[in-house]
Image 1 (cartoon, rainbow, N blue to C red):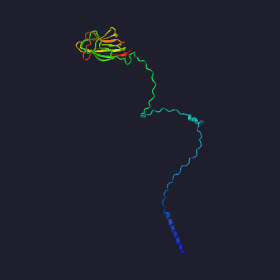
Image 2: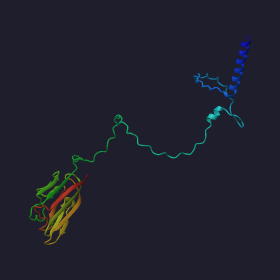
Image 3: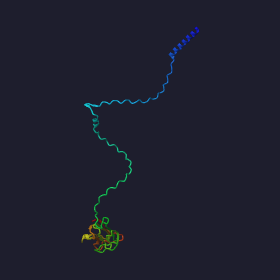
Image 4: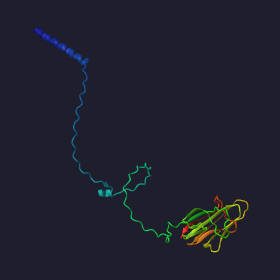
Length: 248
């Protein structure tokens, strides 16, 4: 019994000594952080707060309706911005409805058979006969360039007016002899318009022209003023022309 009691005392003393040494030199390991918990649910909305007090100006409260009607001064106009890119062309729209008929046009200027389409007259004749024309008689021509409509009589060498109006007549002749021609017309009465050029043994050109106002049936032609004048040649260097400027 005494031995057992002594053994118990020795064990207690050993434990005491071991415990005292660990307090001075022994230490435990740091603990591992715990796992993050699951996020909690959103909380409920709170209760609506009470209405605030109306704003007050320096001279008292201001009605909210008046504040809405108040408008500030307009600012300065800003600078124009850069032009944007050109847009795409739109699709073609539907065909519109026909417009209303226009007003009738003015009356035409045609008289009787001489309508606007018929009021035309022009001729151009060439003399190819190499002989001199007969003195004081109409000069005749052998080649027709233009005669539309056929108001120029190739047999007599005279233009006969069919459409009343203003006409222009001109002639052109080239030769190596003296030339003297004159324009004759009923519209001139007894007057004759003479054109002369006297140069020997040299090429010369004689031209002349006149504007006449003619009535239906009046005639225009060329005559020689001497026995030479408008001599023709196969090259067609002598020509007589005329055309209507304005119908009446």
